[in-house]
Image (cartoon, rainbow, N blue to C red; front, top):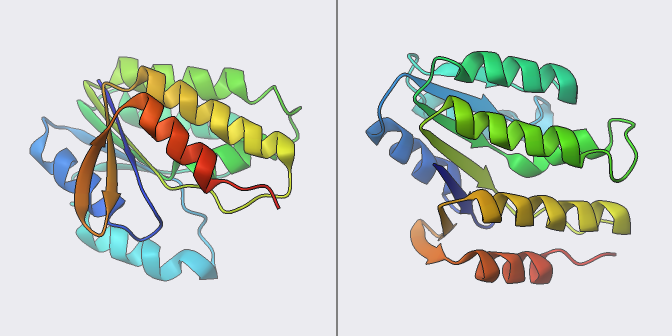
Length: 181
């Protein structure tokens, strides 16, 4: 079962998903997508402080093929998986040198593999910042539509509050939240 958890940056999505993961059957896997750079160090430290050491951790490297293999390895023996930061994974996938449409196969495979290897998959994402690339804008929208169609539930987390959404409502929010500059 895939559950999509969306909302604005720093709206409480990760903490909400981590609580759901703690309540779900183990063993647990946590796939972290935030770039390990100075801009995100405080947020990464905050996330790490909330995570039990018993969770299997996979910090994505930026190489989509290696990331897919490592994530699948970590998830193979997990009952429940949290994939935190989908847009960061999509950014790496899109800008990995693949053509604008070539990202769909590895992304689709990644989501399907997660769903097959874990009984519960929580996917956390925030709207990407405004982008100057129309191709990337459309790729994000397409990827989110794929995720929403495969999700059994979609929750919008903002200010620590949870709001259930339909796939159509989530897609409409995406279209409003991602202006092309």
